[in-house]
Length: 115
Image (cartoon, rainbow, N blue to C red; front, top):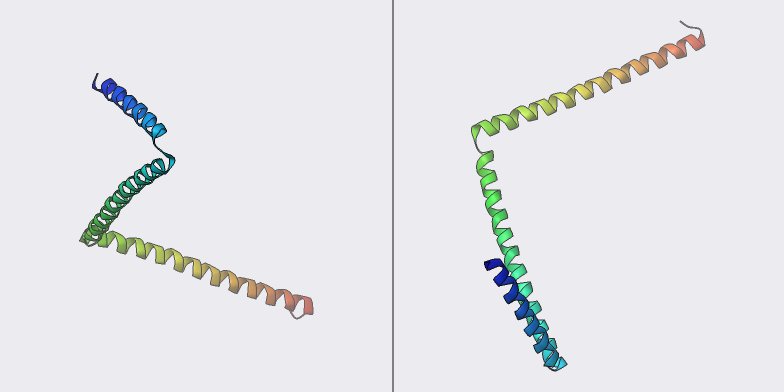
């Protein structure tokens, strides 16, 4: 019931505001709309400030979380695993490069009839 009351009040308010705006000279109507826009922008900026404050809090808690010994250990293990994978890739690339070089040398020797 309260929801219906709010909807009816809102409709009446909007209807009155629309009728009032129709009777006001264009210049005053423009000023009212500008003031309304300014209020809306202030509200948006206030929301933005809240978002910024929340971001600061999240960053603070993230730093606290990252300082925990168990988290540090997880980061360390993940780093080690990543470096191991990288090194395995480097070693594979070196081995493949060496194999290709040997194959090229052997192929060249066969073509020259020296093998």
